[in-house]
Image (cartoon, rainbow, N blue to C red; front, side, top):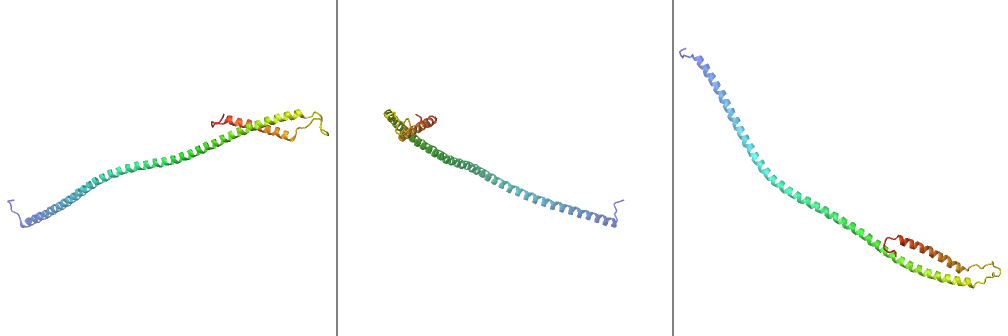
Length: 190
């Protein structure tokens, strides 16, 4: 009414005000505590961010260096693979050339043998011609009369029979060699 307050009411209001003050003080203390914790966490996060950024920059430089080395080593591996392939090709070429040279040598030997065979064949043909002349002379000198106790016509001698067989064999061999020489692709055909 006129501003008069009873003691009981005064003490009750004072207790309420003190309780409210304690509550506000407790809220204020909790706020400052939370603020200090938040600031400490922010500082820690900022420090960690700075450390992470520095580490990231270091790793970026390291990554670039490793990428360069990897490219260099990849090129080195590629070059080594090419060198291995070149060595393998050189070995294969060497084996191939050795085979070609041995075939060339074999062709040379066969050509020499062919020349010797031709020479022998010409000599054999000359001998056959001589034997044929001798045979003709011998047949001309044969007495047409039957040999005593023999058949009506005389038989050629063993030497003459052997000469004819030899001449036939030489003719067959000459035709074979001529046919082989005609089919030869080695450049020795004459």
